[in-house]
Length: 412
Image (cartoon, rainbow, N blue to C red; front, side):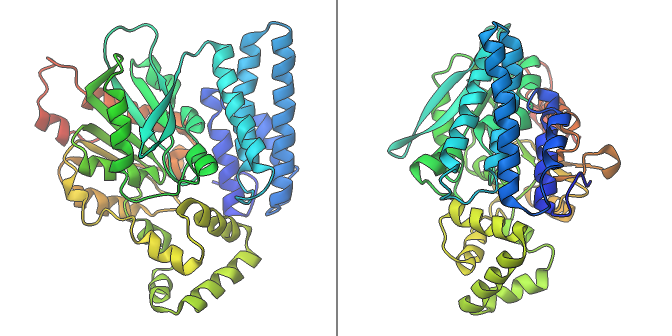
């Protein structure tokens, strides 16, 4: 699905911003008029024009607040959050504009929730001598512990973005409590503490679950993980090693990061594993000079994984595989995939389901549904309805009469 650009990275990020309109995170007209002003592959123009739109919408929010129109302001602030986040996206990790743009994105999101009266508790979760941030959302018309969805982001997502990507308003409407958080390699932990990614995410999710034990609104027996994009590795990895996970959704699947990265040219990728580091690094530098997509991917990978070279990166990617551990996952697991996913092919979803075994089922979104892209950003409503319909059936209320085996064998 092409929107505006021949660059896959630019076009996908445009579609990503458009996707959040159903949950108040963007408007199509604001997105499309912004990208019309951006030359294909021009990362500087990308920042300037998205920041321009963000500031315009942010200014409209300030005017509305001054006039006492809080809901109008709240709507604008949530959209401004998305536009600031999108503006920041292609900046280098050390670009001096990045901290202020990120800060304003986060501030706009929080102010937008406040203006709209969306209640949330900000979490500070103890983690290995420091803390990682999060949010807890609870339906305001329910009492007692709720089944709880813990959303896990990926390679470049922010906790605030997950509010839209995971359809938090829909989850709340269905009676779920929702937790959004950021771990090493993501959001504030990466930007403010320098915490880079790690493959053993059970040691990240575990402290989150520990912190939720004292939350009265959270049902400890009905904790579901929804892992978005690269979170489609993180969430199943945690489910493999933490039996507190009652259900797991890979949205989309990413069980073997090296295999996914090598899918377009598997023979070349395999050959690169045996090539001298100098050759691998030289080839990567050439790619970065001629392609904005390659340049962003390499620069962001260095930042997120804490590596210096392309050769280091290819060795690191091989650590992120569930090939040997998928069989440990025994909770109901839903594996989502898109026919047109340019990050990871559908065939790897089938492989992952086979590795997990009978507790796993898959759902492939089709091109004709407008949902074939990675994380279904062309039809996010369809994706989130699919997820929460499955969770409605899987996180069965006590006394419902549905047995464990019935839950595990139910396919979407």
